[in-house]
Amino acid sequence: MKLNLLGRLGTNSFLRALGQRYIEAPMLRKMAAKEKYPLCLEIGCGRGVGAEIIVKKFGAEKIIATDFDPDQIERAKRHLKNKFKDKVSLRVEDAMALDEQDNKFDAVFSFGVIHMTEDWKKTIKEILRVLKPHGELFFVEMLDGITRNPFLCRIFHYTGGGEFSAKELEDSLGKEGLKVTGFKQIGNLFALGAARKKE
Image (tube, rainbow, N blue to C red; front, side, top):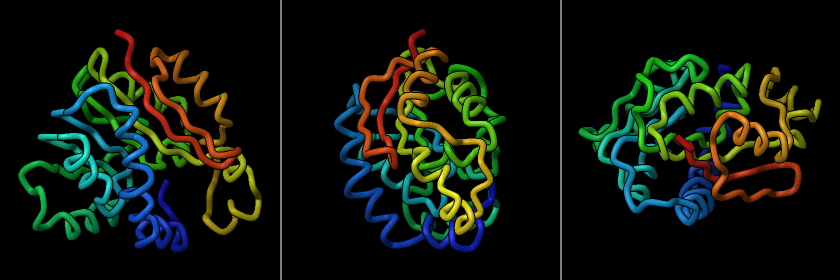
């Protein structure tokens, strides 16, 4: 789903980048089972802050960073222009239909993207498909305390498809073949965690 003006401003803001770098990344790093993840995929890369974090904190040697919105890919190109250019490949892709081969990635990252897709369960199936056996998913997601709030939906032009509680998210990951190895819930607003592909 493409973001509206307010959604883009929030996603691309300095405050959002601070949150990713100094709150989300350290929490996810503590949940990681490995020191390094050589080949990574980021869905919904926004302006490229996530890709930067994945290189610096998770030891990625190569990242394919994707976004549904071509404008966000252009922002990421500008942000990453003089950084990690040999490590980050940027592509316009739909998280529900990834143009990647099966069992390819050591880790997949979603910094607030699964809940933005039109069919969040389909997105999880795609993530599972492209992860290597024992590969890990790292995620930060808004919960239904936000996504089912009519006022916030109207502001951010949120059209639904990714409305889930923490329990629904955790249960769905397990059902699809991902073992949840770390999970932190902040009320019914946010959840972040890690899950490992079983086979």
